[in-house]
Image 1 (cartoon, rainbow, N blue to C red):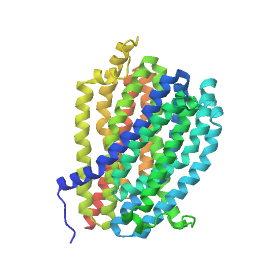
Image 2 (image 1 turned 90 degrees about the vertical axis):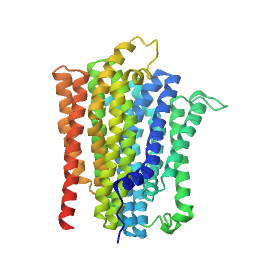
Image 3 (image 1 turned 135 degrees about the horizontal axis):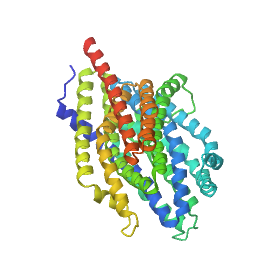
Image 4 (image 1 turned 45 degrees about the horizontal axis):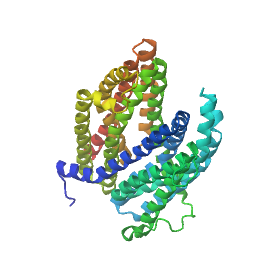
Length: 454
C-alpha cells in the first residue's frame, strides 16, 4: 500500500525540489541583468539595441521552449510509472524538436532589421539589433537544448546541477562580456557583437556541461539518453509536439501581455515608462520564486499521476499552492511597506526625474502587490495542469484572459479613459486574475472527477 504523506511532508518535499529551481531561475534572470548593465556602461545605442535584440530573441525562444518544457511532465510521469524507456523517448524527441525549431527560426534573426523597422523602430537601433541577433541567433539551438536537459534533469530530481550550472553561466557571461565588449585582457573590443558572442559561448558551455552530466553520471546511465540519437521515434515526437506547442503559445501570450503594457506605458510618458520598467523588473524577480515552485509542482504531480496516487497528487498540489501564497503574502507586505528603497536602487542620485519616477513606481508596486496573488495562482495552477499533461485548454484560457480581456482593459483604462499607469496595470491585474480563476476551476474539476472515481 502506498504511504500517505502529510501536508507538511509534501511542503518539505516541494521545497527540497523547488529551491534549487528557484535559484536557477534567479540566476537565469541575472544573465539578462548583467548584459543590460554592462552594455549600459559601454554605450546607450548599444544598450537600446540589446534591449530590442534580446526581446526579439526571447519571444522566439519562449515559443520554441515549449518542447523542452513538455519533457518535464512526461519524464516525471514516466518515472512515477516505472517506464524508463519512455523517459528516454520523450527527452530524445524533445531534443529533436528543439533543434528543428532553432534552425527554422534563424532566418528571423538574420533579417530582423527589416522586421524591426517595419514595427516602427529607429533604423539605426534596428540595424544594431540585427548585428546582435545575427550572432546571438546562433545560440538558439543550444539554448533550447539546454531547456530540454534542464527539464529532464529536474524531473529526475537532479535540481542541484541545474542550479550550479546556471550560476556558473552568470560568472562566465560576466567574464566574456568584460573581455569582448570592452576589449580587456588582450581581447578585441567588439561592443554589442561581443555581448552576442558571450551569449552564444555561455549557451554552448552550459549545453556541454549538462550533456556530459546527463550522459555519464552512473545513476543516469540506465536511461541511455544519447544512444542512437539519430533514430526517429515518430510516436514520441508527436506526443512531445502535441504537449509542447500549447506550452510555447501560453508563454508567448503571457509575455505578450507585459510587452503590450510597456508599449502603452510609452504612450503615457517617459517617466511612467521608466517607473514601469523598474516595477516590472522587481516583480519579475519575485515571480522567479513562484515559477520555481510551479516547476516543482509539475514534477511532483507528474510522478503522482504516473503512480496513480490521486491522494498524494491532491495533497501535493495544495501544499505547493500554500507555499506560493505564503511567499506572495510576504512580497505584498514588502511592496506596500518599502517601495521607495526598492525603486531608488535602480536610479542614480543625480537623476533629474528621480522623485517623480519613485512616486509613480510606488503606485505601480502597489498595483503589483494587488496582482501578486493572481500571478502566483495562475503560474502554480499552470504547473499543476502541466503535470497532468493538460496544456491545450490552459493555452486557450491564457490567450483569452491576456489578449481578449487584459490588453483591451489596459488600453481602455490607461489610454482611453486617461488613468495612465494605474489603468495600464489594472488591465494586468484583471487579465491575470481571470486566468487564475479559470485555471483553478479547471484543476478543481479534475480533482472532483478523481474523487468521484475513487
